[in-house]
Length: 417
Image 1 (tube, rainbow, N blue to C red):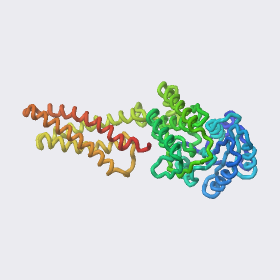
Image 2: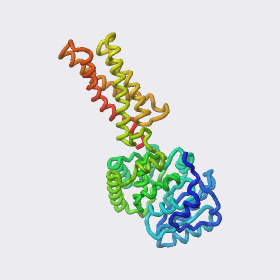
Image 3: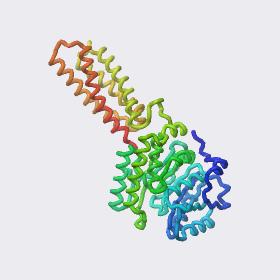
Image 4: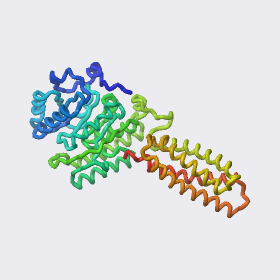
């Protein structure tokens, strides 16, 4: 398991110096969690949000935690207010950037942090803070690499207008179609990442604005990292100053840029997988749909061989149709179990019965194709031998296999979307 101690002092000193105003009270502490609040002209909302979050961390979080206010080029008194809060409250620091942009502020704050896990949340604290521990616990334990709050999960409770709801769902649908993303909510302002992972991902993230989240998640997913999702309760801030239309246009441009970089190989995904220890489980078999197809093909070849042996063994005692039914049923059950664990990476006993039921429905389709092929063959030539029968059945099974892949991918492959 990767060490969660965070970067060494030498590594921190080697980075470009961020303008972090670290108080004497916080400099000596070893933090497990560093929560960044990126702000631009938030002098009014900042004090209440920081005090509320500070109280929650002190009373509900069992790890040493820090709040870092990342001011990105505010033109009002936000920086002065932030510095006053840092002087008043322990474990509150400030970082200032001359350039505007939420992504840039997060990148500077995360890269200069010495905590084991870095996170961020919007200044309005729209996300219920009770989701914080479920968000960061899998990262602190080392089980997951990135964690995101999701407003689009079935169990999430969200209050926002229909316009934002439509735009959010449409945007995430575009991500799935254009970039093959499987995470459900790219832009919820409630995310965390292991610091050792962040130090390798962030240099590859080009965007410094609102697309920063999406780009980070797409790269993380392509690198084979585990992205943990937490359903959240979320209330829209009616005073939000985000230009939704302008942000949406920039996000679409970002999708095009990242998609082109992935297609051209400009993003060093394989090198990143190697450096993070997330190489494919089978050498040469990549993550994603291509990898699923390869693994599915391996299972399919083994299933076809098993089916052929069973059919030939049973044919002499049961006849063609009964031998086909028995061989197909036995191999279908084994095939579903193998694809569940090997192809789509589903572990544990949860949902086994439901998955096998879906597998049997696909089996029924395969049986209809193969039995129909046998029936048509015997009508054409009743004297045909079992070798010819088996050849026709193998072809029919190939057709059924294509249907099986699409059906099983629907059952297993989109569970994290």
